Image (cartoon, rainbow, N blue to C red; front, side, top):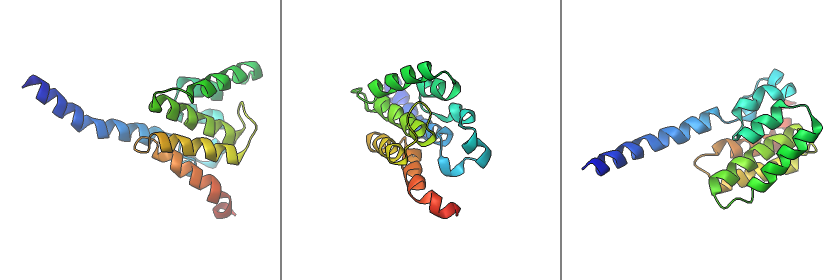
Length: 139
């Protein structure tokens, strides 16, 4: 009986936890212009502590080490770990933090993040679409 109750509670909370992750995730379309030009302010909305550190440091050597760590994480067998790393690499490529600024690379990583965990990383799909169509909408 206790096991059934625990499973019911977990089943009830799981969508809430996924939604909380999704709500706090970086959605480029909802970022104020000041934060777009100061991306370090967005660190708390990235998916991993490594990605957060990447956005918070200005040291080029440390940034390259953090990017290397994220690139290793995208190969992780756990799809959630890989999705989170891809999400943060998408943001890094979009803003040119630790990587060359490249919208195609950002779209690729955001797309992989969504493909790996569509229920959790809806923001990744939103970001990929916004990068594709956002510049037209902002003119």
